[in-house]
Image (cartoon, helix red, strand yellow):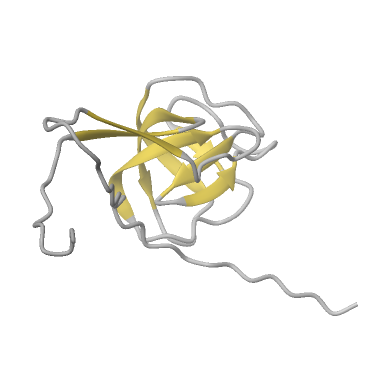
Amino acid sequence: DRSSIKPIEISTTIEALDWDDLGIVHVTNGSPTLTVVQLLDNVERGDQLSIQGLLYTVATEGVLNSSIVTLTRNFLGKTKQNEILYKAGHDCNTGKHIVKYTPFVRGDYLLDIKLPKIYSVIQIVTNNE
């Protein structure tokens, strides 16, 4: 019976698949523009970006330079400075992660992985035809 065994915490690394850390931006709720603080890689028109766990597309028109990135729609998350900007893969395979750990004791392990909480805003679009 393993139900009486106390859980232990082990050091892990968690890597989101098909996500690239692009840098740091300031975001404003209701605005389609991101103010760039630091970019580690190029952002191109049509790229899928993830901010606060929500996906956005870089606009085909509008400002796109080292200081400003324009999105195809308004930012729906919380206004925040120094937000991490990720580039999502073309298939948006952002729900899969690689978790690595080193076991310190020989035997069987039951893993319970918890990722950091991401507050999301759901956008529902309806139309009447």
